[in-house]
Length: 230
Image (cartoon, rainbow, N blue to C red; front, side):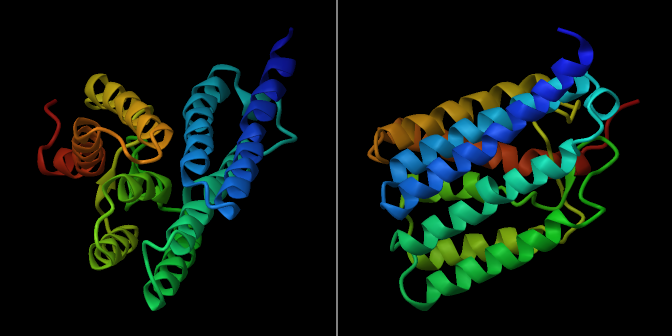
């Protein structure tokens, strides 16, 4: 198989994320939150793999008729934003007006963030919270906090999207990647475990999910506080 075929194969692999998004949405409509999140975890894994493959096979050069970045953004909005927002609204975790506030804030601010040309930093991190509502939602489902706490989390993360705070990309941010990437793998496994157990996971899994989430959210800010040694 030549490089051109491999590059287009990467695009096809990325596009499977849209299928997994639809499967997740179908489960969400049925109220099967565990299966919904399992499909979102699969989409999350695809999203983590397709970037390195795209760079390896130089898709911009070898498969230029498909815009891989646009394809990725479309799928990410579905899997990272739209479906998790629907789940928070439909699950009953945010009753009444609180659910409406959450879905409006999440979808409105996230679509603006996705279109922001300042999204990426020079070290391949993100400027502002990168609208990873799928990650926030799975932790919320696993921990089941009160609706005021959930609203506080939504408000904080939505505001954080439009700040100069840095949030790492576990694969592409080189600084501390030897630690960040394994933690991201662990987080993914914990999220899948919690969903597989229909969010009745052991307490150790819950706490490990919280700790790894806090690391992934805060490590970029910590890197800003601690300048890299030259």
